[in-house]
View (cartoon, rainbow, N blue to C red):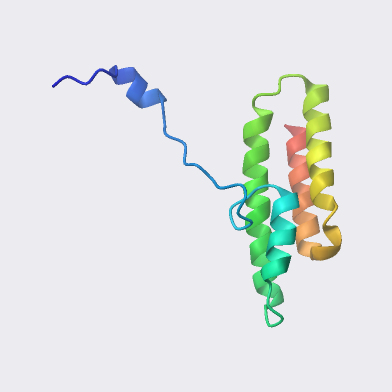
Length: 114
């Protein structure tokens, strides 16, 4: 049987894995992540574990931002989008360590420079 999909479509159409943005463990949205992980933290959770969870969140956040910014062509709109998204994460800064706040500032700087 012949495959009806042309050869080039196989090369250029990569399947994207679906991410459950409603699960705090997989989301890149601050409004879902921070309340979700705070609700599940145990009193004996070490600060290193908390930093690891927040670092993983920032990595997902940065990846999502990179993808969304590829679609925005105007520099003013890109900058405003970056600032708005960073401010949404900063609402939760009292729950973040200095290390995480520093990484967030580095992400903002790198996104604004691109």
